[in-house]
Image 1 (cartoon, one colour):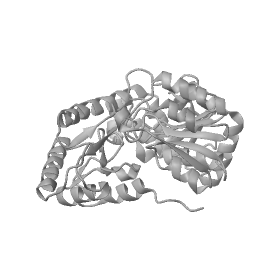
Image 2 (image 1 turned 45 degrees about the horizontal axis):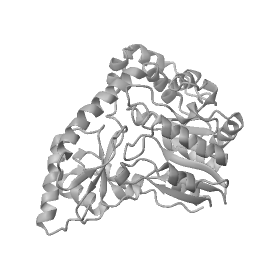
Image 3 (image 1 turned 90 degrees about the horizontal axis):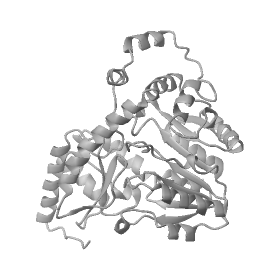
Length: 382
């Protein structure tokens, strides 16, 4: 089994830890909460919680997951029961468990790109044939359902994608979701959806497990819940036979979750609307600033109305994406996530959610662009 380099994680994490990183605009998690901020937000008493921690049993968490947390996760969906929730070590643990359980050598799968790299590199590493369907900027990164239908045949085992999309933030409508289910049903294929950014609209955001009994979705405490350090992820799987296999696979990887992490996140999810509102407010504020910056910008283009925590922004300068972001970090101290992490050249991912000193960072990006042009870097055609 030979794995491709995990471009995003291997580049962004060292860059984020660099002393050169002064203004961090490359992440995708909503500004992390401190313990004090969390308890103030949800209206619980931190001192009482810490007293409970004194007597916490530090043995294994329940194998199937803390019942309180499974119940809280199930309530994030319309049709999910607690027994359909499988807790994992983070969202990457959830995605990894699904792929490694489902995919075998010789399988045929469709990966809708851009995607989180686990959902195309892991199937490849297992010897699957991966058919790629690309979301295109000229369509606002909306899915071409006819192209998807042409890619899916009776040999297709699964369709892998993210919704809202990472990194563009493009969101499928309920009509598009229903059409995808029809396409999957014809092939008796699984729908595997990473929903890490689901929940940022004021109204309920449908999940594929609301629509299809051969859907599996993944999510985590990291992105819109601002609690990445708790390392809680989950899989929703309505199919009982597949759940057995998922639990069996997880036994080889992690056995169970962390007792403290699951306890704390359960408490947070019991007040989930307050966490959602905080995330929505942060993103709305930052999005307004970025939209104003992009309006009429001579060198930058953004194509999708993002329902996630980031924008994917294309630039019109003839510079490779990694070099663009490396030099911006080295020269200006601003960290963006370069588009080659998602195999999209001449672009970068900009955070709408973890964006302290945002306006200063945008000004430095503009200065950097002007300096590149002054050095003779060529403009590209749109």
